[in-house]
Image 1 (cartoon, helix red, strand yellow):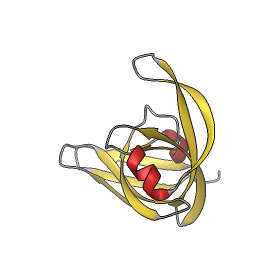
Image 2: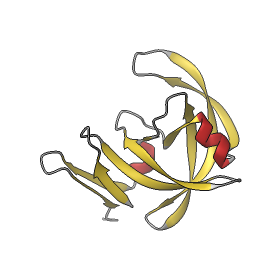
Image 3: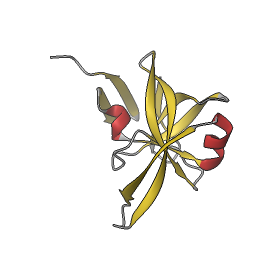
Length: 123
């Protein structure tokens, strides 16, 4: 998986995402304030053919509570297919949250503009 800092200095990961109609590699912003797996632009979700799974209440950064549709999709993570829960955004920005990173070690060196993601040791 490719990890990098974009021109604005934001940490990003390229992650393959698969739905029932298509698969694409997304360029997602690493958002450590987002505790879900992925948040994708609505147009991408339509293109992928994601399956609706649930409706949940979420609290936004400004404290607002709202209902969110949750879709199922698959990502290729550490070389393995992994089912993830995906929420949607009207923004054009895909977000990768801490839910997807839960079994990983994420190291970010902003000074050197280096990012590494690896599987956490079992012990």
